[in-house]
Amino acid sequence: MSRIDREGPIHRAILHYLRVVLPGAIIHHSASEGVRGGKAGYMDGAKRKGMGQVSGFPDILALTEAGPLFFEVKAEGSYASPAQKAMHGQLAALGYSVAVVRSVEDVREVLAAWGVATREAAE
Image (cartoon, rainbow, N blue to C red; front, side):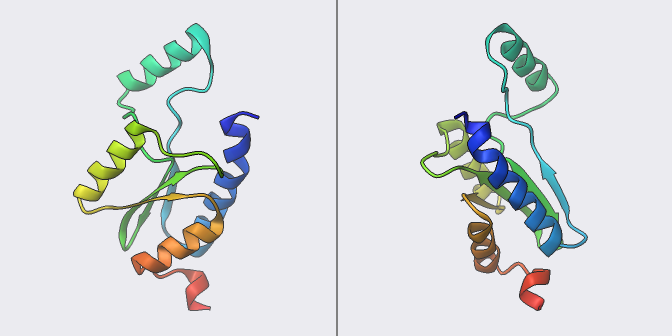
């Protein structure tokens, strides 16, 4: 099973959750560097990088009243790549909140730890 097949359902559940609990926030998915193999994948990657895509950028960006929040979605058994770890370090050095998450529950816990008010917490 491919990474996308394993992470896709988790990713979609997290996007839905964030859109529900952070009303008014802008929730954005950043496309992966490339999902097709071979020459087509290479061309996709070159085109995206030429348009400004940055290697290792987190999967989800939530623009909220609390500031930008970054989430890297990983399936169980998958880990951040060296480029992702480096990007997470750069974002943290700039004072931004970034986390690797594997479930909606992880996101819920991270938001609470960051002190981000959610519709869910208010209920």
